[in-house]
Amino acid sequence: MSARALALPRVRRDRLALLVLLALLVLLVAACAGAPAVVPGGTPGASAAATASPHPPLRPAVPAADPASLLAWLLNPIFQALFILLVWFEQITGDIGIAIVVMTLIVRAALIPLFRRQIVSTKRMQLIQPELKELQKRYKGDRARFSQAQMELYKERGVNPASGCLPVLLQLPLLLIIYSVISQGLTNPDPTAMFHVFGVKVLDAQCVNGLGTAAYDPFRPCIDTTVGWLGNMDVSRPQVLFSLPLIGGFSILAFIAAVLQLVQSRMTMPPSDPAYQDQNSKMQRQLVLFLPLISILYGGFLPAGLFIYWIVTTVFGIVQQYLIVGWGSMFPLFGWSPGFARDHRPRFPVEAPTLGSPPRGDVKAGKTTQSRPAARTEADRAASAAATVRPRERGRQGRRGRKR
Picture 1 (cartoon, rainbow, N blue to C red):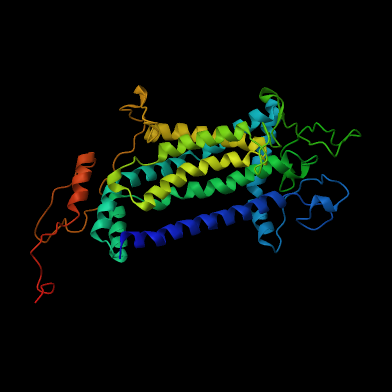
Picture 2: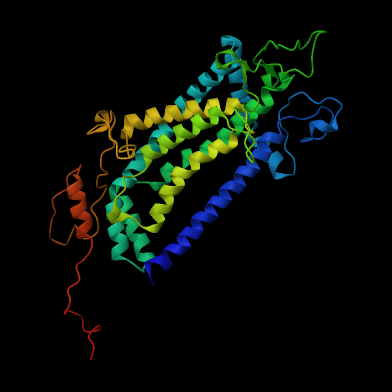
């Protein structure tokens, strides 16, 4: 069986995983966007258009039989905590834009250990790629033995590939909850029910629409969503610089978010090595560079506050990656490599994964072996990878393989 025939099923699995991820995204959007607001006296999940008032009070989600309402009820504590935190900072600073920035920094600071584990795991996986490629050559056509040898290599090097998946899975629901907080929480005229936790009022917000007075305006949000230092930008609505067909319009915030995500993606990508390039690796590199550009398409219909959150969290991630892996594969860029990027060593570098236990064949009966060094150079790793392949000599065959 050819290498191309072996690569096709993996490509199909990658596409299937992408489709499943997009389906999960649609489900979470429906849950976060539709369930937190419940009309008083109505059924959970009822739309605002079915009532006389276009702006019903915002209330916690209640569980229902449909999956979207059940998921919204499960995510409601996170929604409520982030909404209370955001409104509290807005009441202190008097600016919703600064409140979004501060809330984002607090959320990312709380997730530093989780994202650090992901960055370290990704870097260590890149360091053992030459050995994995040699194992693929050695066990070509035998996926069972290759999988067993791969697991043994991970165990020997102390690498856990699953540790880098959790932050990626966490980012999607967190992003959708922030979207719900901005698009529904900040635009609601009466969110006071969300400020109560187990019947206790934890925040006394002062609404700008006169809530609780005779001058109450049910068509005006409780929270002032304009940001003066961004040209009185309304963060609860999309901010389009000019109109475009199909996508609705071009947003400068969406463009900045896409550029920063592209920088972050290039920093995490492994260095391009023609000796270890296959069709699967090329497709993954193209996908990593293409996905950030999708953010530009969202600028025409997503609120501006969501892009402020995404810009801040991306900058935070870039700084964290710079301290751990340095510039990564950011340079050379179009053949240009600045002086500050040459021979740069990060502040908290990721060392090569060490041996956790002696690999198979190192310990024999009646013999002892010397321990390997903890840190190996690139030449040592290349030599070790080459040694895993047993050279084939022509003219020497076993009895079973000898032709008669």
